[in-house]
Image (cartoon, rainbow, N blue to C red; front, side, top):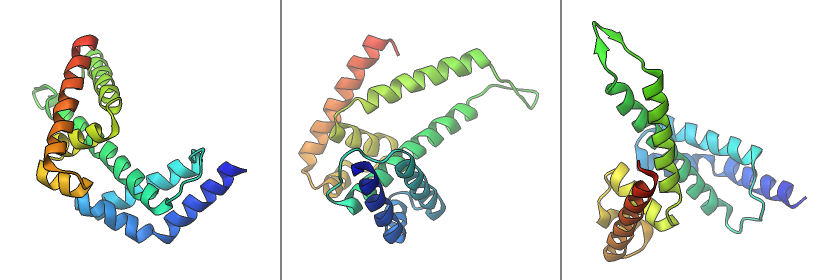
Length: 170
């Protein structure tokens, strides 16, 4: 019963704040169509797998969930585009090597797991700075922490990723 109540509250909050959530994502990615897709994905995610505990601040939760989903989708799109751009071309025919694609996909999944295993703030700082090239000062303002803390989180994230890469031979 608790899950149904939590699900209903979150979905109701999402519907009531639909435009605000789209605007929130759009502020970061400057693509309204992308922001709409993200909010729709969040709706489906919550409808299929609602949180197990009650959420104290549904709007804050929805904003964070939407932004995290947008980061995941943008990261996936960037990796896919880079991979497709680097495929070898012979006589205007795209060559597709299934084994290389599988190996690449497996490495990407390992890297995603390493990044997902980072502590929350380290992961957020790392993705915003490395993937979206947001300056550390702007990240500090957005997260409400000092620039020094952003730098520390970023340095620790790099150290943790380096250790994990060595252990996994990525």
